[in-house]
Length: 101
Image (cartoon, rainbow, N blue to C red):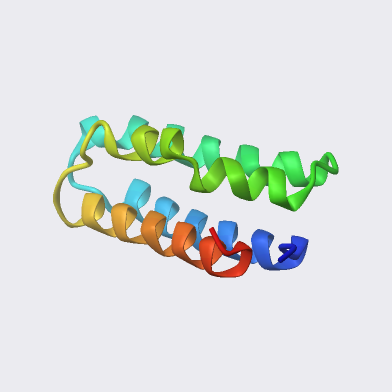
């Protein structure tokens, strides 16, 4: 099943909202640059869509195991690490539900 561009943008923005919250609220200053890099990665997905890459290509990147590895290799500390991990899982699950992967 094809994935809708607006749906994917909305889901990425939901994820970015959580990342921004983690970046701005964390008490672990050493995690702040990591959250900033995570935000840049997610913004890159939006930029790819804006450059007219197909939503399925961007979605495939998001659900790829290398993306999971990128976001989970270094555990972000405290409540904020849990929030990010949960938000990533929600994003990936919502995409998989649409494309049937």
